[in-house]
Image (cartoon, rainbow over the protein chains, first blue to last red):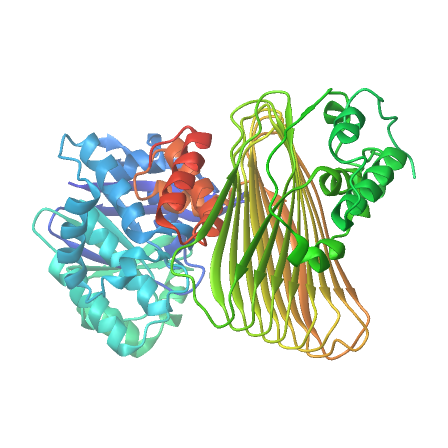
Length: 250
Length: 378
């Protein structure tokens, strides 16, 4: 078991949003977390990544045999947890390649791997950029600054490609993407899918799942998983909307 | 005007020995300026423009006036006369003791190599560089001033910039004096018709430093970028006072100043943008962002926009704060340890200005200086 979430209660600003969530993810699996707005999808992503504003009230999260909740966000990342942001943050003045090399080397240091100098890293980055069809001119530009919505999301997947996480959480990666960008991002993710890693796709819409086919679909409502199934569940949601699951949650 | 009493023993002796009896036009200008200084003295904190910057530690030192050679300015007397030496006691002293350098970029030429001047004052020594740069019509050049005192000296500099019609001048001013040195400098720039002046001022050194910069548009269609960074630690004090004067229509000015303040350092930014009556079609943007890395650091910022006209596009703003939590979280989720993430964000904040420096060797050195300030390896 790579990730096991048990009876998780968590929230923000004193408001409980997750109300007893359970989730099990094994290596090699792709899980889709779906649900209407306010169901707790984003809260789950943020809690798993360790956002300081979110508070865990009770429950446990075990990742790779460790208590994930005890780890700082950067420790989680070096241990192989990655979250692709719904709204990737701009970091003016810091180039993409500089930033990614630092992240790569911190992880390498932690895992006993080899640190790369700027030239070596640039070669690696060029290879990885092909996965998301990214022009090397983006390496020199400040992280996400002036990037279009689609470029930002591709940059997130590029980071995932460089950091090779064991558990990748893609938080609404499809939001704001046109169909071409969606295809590129999804194909990138598919190329990164291996039997040794797991991917959690957090999404409101079924659209992304046409491209990245999940093994399991979990439907959230009211801070809990209210329905689970295979990929066909996503299609059912697309057809019927979320009202019936919301009703089921009550 | 309130002033500090000037001890009769210094400056006056040096002036008496060197310039008191000169009869030529320049000598007369020097005498006039010194007379003004004698009456006015150094500025004090009772003056609005100096209320945050106490220069008593400079006024109290018995400085040895450097005797540096001066260019012949007979061809540039018109420009020398335009210098506003009554701005304050420093500018008057500069005019009195000025070691002139005159740089002309001939009409319709493009200088391939940047023109670089470097200045340093020795311990106990006061230097008075006064540089006049005339970018003649249609010319293009890059002019660099580096202030790099290695000891506790006083640099009191003046730089007059004339960007004539259709000329394009890029001006980098780097102040990286030793942390026990003093630095006052004024930049006066006039921007002609459809001319372009791009100034970047990097302030890293000195115990007390101040830079006054004034940019005047003299004809339509001028453009100016007036950007800067002050990055301070320990008990350093830096003050930038800026005036951008839109007297004529259809000119554009963009100003971005950033401050990074650590320990007990103190920063001051005062930026006035005037849009005079009749200066329609003005486009002016001004911003001053400050990052406080310590609870004891302090900055006083006052962006001021004074518009006496309609049909203009103007915006200004100032921020003082800590690193953005969301930016920090983003870096942490990529595995950067907290201290490195903070340093990287701070570095990026400063680099936004330093990235304007297009001369590789200088930029590399500044990158290193910023990292050194942060005690970081990136």
